[in-house]
Image 1 (cartoon, rainbow, N blue to C red):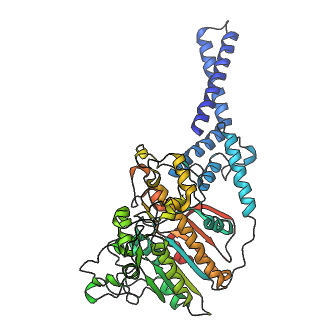
Image 2: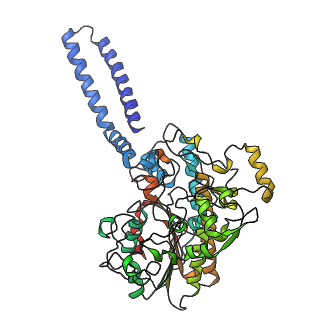
Image 3: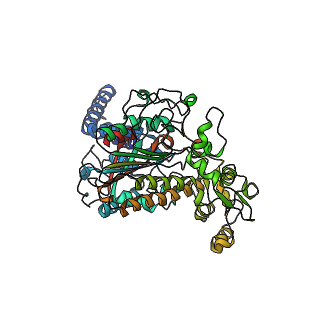
Amino acid sequence: QGRNNIIIRHKSINRRLEDETRVMRGRTSAVGLGATAATAALVLLLLLNARLAADRSLVGERMRRWLTVLEGYRLLTNKDDEAGGERRRRLWGMGPFSDPATVKRRPDGGGAERRRERERERERERVGNAPPLPPVPRPNILYLLLDQWRFDWDGWHPQTPTGELPLNLPFLREMGENGTRFVQAYVPSPFCSPSRACMAAGREYDETGVMTNDGHDFSHRIKTVYKLLRDNGKYHVMSAGKDDLYSNDKKFPKYRHDKKSIKFQPIDLGFSDMIRTNGKIMTAYRAPKAMPTWFDEPYRKFLRWHEVETEDGRTIHAKTAYKACLEGLGPEGGCDSTSFTEEIYPDDFVRDRAIDIFDRRPKGKPWLLQVNFPGPHPPIVSTSAMARSVMGRKWPPPLNRPDFENYPCPQTAGLTKFEQEVILASGEQTPVQPQTGGRCNYAAEIEHLDALMRSIVDHVRTSGELERTIVVVSGDHGENLGDNGFEGKGLPWQASVSVPLLIAGPGVARGHIHGGPVATLDLGGTF
């Protein structure tokens, strides 16, 4: 747009110069052709120089604004997110580049932009003027960490480049209203173990020794944030779930390691108490011969010893139902609306274990509790209730994915809108089977996690310690979710390397939006 304005400006200059030329030709009829040409050329040159000199600052200003378009891919694609809005305000003179009183509104779509700006200002006025809660010395820290959670599926991006995103995340909305939202939070690596190692060490990717998900060889020479908080800060440091830092933890070894399974020099990561679980996939299958003690993993043991009942009255192991659902085998394989419920869901199991270790903490001592949820990391799987909850809503397709119509929401495939309404209205009389895959079930997992995070915060509130607790919600990396034809993570693209980050609690600004880039590896130093 800045380039177009310059072109329009110079076309206007050219038209004025042509008019001046015609006037000059009329006034110089008595002069020789050579003198006329020389005079006209001189006048044209003087006019052009004067005009350019007068407009030099304006042209340079617009060129600088045009160049700011190259700052990031998000400005071109995520037009309605807060960071994009901030960059557009800078681009059109509403930021530090110029005086807002002298800047003209953009000629195309200015009305819509003004309406969006007024809506954003009203939102900030509603939640942004509340003073922060007074800071407290040595506050507790509740760190809720999701796995493979992309930046724009956080309940604060109702509009995406490909359509509306109808997520219902009341807890995360309250977190943003009562705390600070970082809209450009980036991870040091788009993989689980390296990203978490960087946060634990407070160091860059190439300084931790954890290069991939397969190594887990966290350097024993590094003092982790957890160890510093425990030993120097006298904190009680707890962790529940899939932390991905386990291969050489000597105090809480991975499921009672035998000597043959320890590949790296042991390290005390710094945890005071821990219940460590595995990822979704490893839990479902038999332990490899090299790691026989994986059978001691808590969630695996729970599934093996827990029994569930199928719709047709069969009693099977919960592990059989869980594996059948991950593989999409359906009721024939043991995965149906009664066998696979929230009672055996992996994220619910981690929530329960987090509450267990919280309840057995020593009283009168500051604490850090890190809750490592396995979701919404693939395999994306939803229970019957979760699958039903996202029906009747239209989910936006991936970016640059022309074949998306071949990948509809699994539970609504082949159903008309009327048929979906009938199923929703019938309640439990028409069961919706557990589902795998699809953007709608990714949304179902996040909405379920939103409720689980609230339950943990409510439990801390019941204990009387929430007023002294800083709550942090983030992810270890993002998820492409079909954008540009790619699923999963591992790419240096916005959807893969950017995550939500929300912080609330004593001393934290309420209703504040931080638009500048931040790195999740700095959370350790912040703690």
